[in-house]
Length: 61
Image: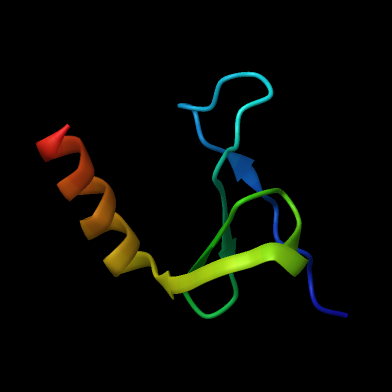
């Protein structure tokens, strides 16, 4: 049985707002969805690419 991803809600979400959820996945992947439901998966990327993305977002504000 494959373990289900544990979705984490972005710390920048306001109550009731459209939020981004992130979960790590087997094989060093990061999953990104617009809600805590894997059926609504928007993006799957490597942990390295995700870290680069977050770093760039933080640097540019």
